[in-house]
Image 1 (cartoon, rainbow, N blue to C red):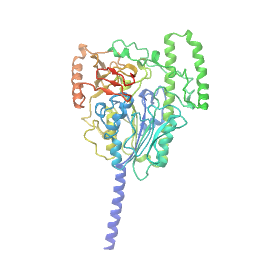
Image 2 (cartoon, one colour):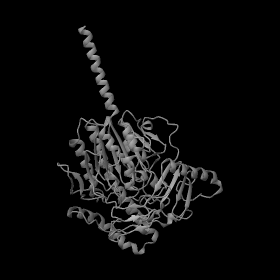
Image 3 (cartoon, helix red, strand yellow):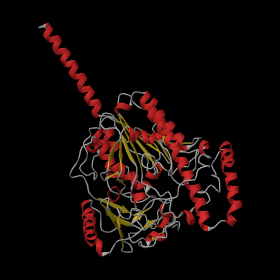
Image 4 (cartoon, one colour):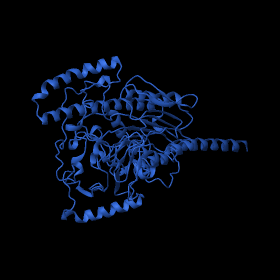
Length: 527
């Protein structure tokens, strides 16, 4: 009898160990790494021609790379609101930058926290409101500067305070993420950390150690740098985001930042003053084309310099996961709030439904769950991120979320009824860069865009016209495709509960933008 009890106890103990191990595997830590305005063209796992990003590439090599990750609304704040809520802009209420995110609504960090996760967000927040659903936050105020950032956090009494910092913002954010992982979090709980960078957002100020990196390199120009916007609907030519005519002196580093410490300023001037002097001496004899080429090189090199610092920081965090024995049970997701134009169509910025800004990088590592060096071509989205993290954590996904969990794809499964089309909607007009409001649908091979305020349409055959230079709308050859996509656009609008009419939007400063695009000044008369 005694022997039987001992065997029973041993069996029960082994069962507890198995259950504990199973629960641990089902409840991974989650590290969500996010950048601002980082495009596939500047990530060597996608495009090795411009830069090497070994630490981002490591996530792809040890995990999975998605080739068609589309964003629902290609602009910073709205993309972040979609990720928090798993809802399109018209349902989460954050249509455009300049308004407050309603933090009282349901978000995936709140659901994780309610189910035993410790949650934190460090770095760029850009949703105006104070983060909710987090045990810890330490975030930039608004856009935040590249150097010496003030950041908002909670003190020991639970009061929201602003603290000043000296240093390069990318490095400050990495240090804070590592400090939280090493010393602040509860080691007895699984964690979800949103580690979010400002870089490489405009105006692309590099770290001191990279101010001269790439000086001796000529970056290849994109095929469409000299686009003249013919054969398109009119909005393509009416924007305010051309490298040649819309960049500021601060963008081009012809003027130094005004918030540097004396030591930082000395290094900055030593790097840029000689280069700027050479340009000033030569530009009188340069053609408009040559000046555009100079601006392109200055812009893209500074952008890539910012990306390199981000990659360095990601390497530090991945190394810590290895050293702390956390890597095997941590789901790592790398993405950006949208894509970006590195000179394609002569542009910088984002916003359009064209490929460079519609697509965003997505790399995922999950040891034991993802086959290394996997590639998936299905249409996925930032709309899916919230559901994916909840599903991976074993937390029920609310029925009102509008995306899909990527967990089956991560585990290598084929999903026959996975989405075949994708709905896009951009609202910020009037606004920065003068990109017209538009909605559209794509199946990855063809794309239909409606600039609905002027009732102009574009249709692109992406296999024959990958650079989207020739509008095929109205051409007899594409009549059936055009009809099918028009029907699908309306079906998706109804499916996602998109109102036929845009709302009037009240900005944080009291300015109102009506559904017709009329700007009503605030009480101060500001527009």
